[in-house]
Image (tube, rainbow, N blue to C red):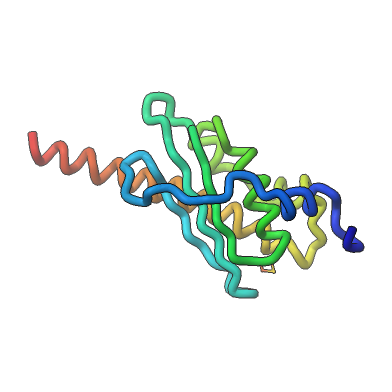
Amino acid sequence: AKRGYHEKVLDHYSNPRNVGSMNKSDLDVGTGLVGAPACGDVMKLQIRVDSATNTISDVKFKTFGCGSAIASSSYLTELVRGMSLEDASRIKNTEIAKELCLPPVKLHCSMLAEDAIKSAIRDYQNKTKRVKQTMGEAL
Ligand code: FES
């Protein structure tokens, strides 16, 4: 193993969970696309939301970035599956960093995961708002 890296990081890095993408235009899908200005790494995270319960029923990611960013997003996908949008929007990057034992210089990599889930939730919420407005206008 690489020195200084926790086993969990290496595990999520070598076997990332839930890699892939969903149809961005599906009404129950929220897409978050965020970048880290510090290094230029990019993360795309998508959630599928069960509107009846307001919980995340499925989640996929693609990360073009360092090992810690890939591990952070992989870990995050496992964490948020089944979670309510409210709880998921409160996830802090420090929780992810702690779980994966990321060193301080890699904190921004976990920040990418926090930003990505927040942005995916916002995208889903904006979409539902637009749908409701359109339906309102049609009535
Ligand atoms: Fe930038 Fe990890 S070095 S996301």
